[in-house]
Length: 72
Image (tube, rainbow, N blue to C red; front, side):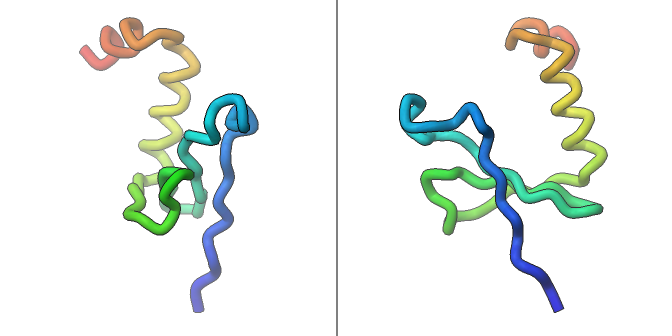
């Protein structure tokens, strides 16, 4: 039996931002991502370890340019 996803949206998303952001649903082995404006459309799915590495890199490298340098 599968359980329904528990989708979360960033606390930074709100009416002033047009409610446009992504939502995530975390599972032990995977993290799923969807567009909050179109929740019934396709989702992306990543291994939890890869998603965690991505988020940590975003925290470390504060600009797109910094992140591009990180990627090489």
